[in-house]
Length: 177
Figure 1 (cartoon, helix red, strand yellow):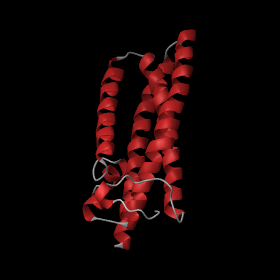
Figure 2 (cartoon, rainbow, N blue to C red):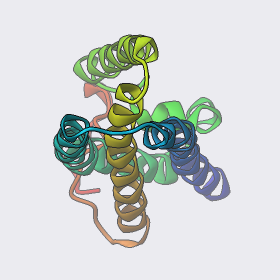
Figure 3 (cartoon, rainbow, N blue to C red):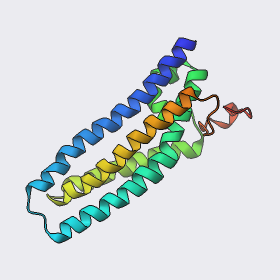
């Protein structure tokens, strides 16, 4: 069971990291094409403002304060309480798409739907606007990847981890993790 838990935690964290890394890779290429055009002062203004906004809202508030600690906590839970299905679907388990609180499932799928809609909207934009917005998203995702790696390290080596894995009510225990 200990080996299954280690595999599940490693698969969960690395799977989520690979998803984020793939998104950064795809967006970064599109973002760089924006710089192939002549950018005017208002393009630069939007680029700077959007990048700062995305770094704060997506990177810091979204990833560092919420998503990364929760993914790490769920990976830690998987390490200590492995179940075969949870291990096989570890990245989805760690992201909170199943076996979590009802609120977390609603938020996870709602966020997924929102991101899909934004992707469809972004794809309709021409350059340099699409690239300008993709720079901000890439920065936010990059921040998120670093945060996820940091929290995952802490969750795996610390004796206790203060973040909740947000397990279903019937599985929550009152003992510290």
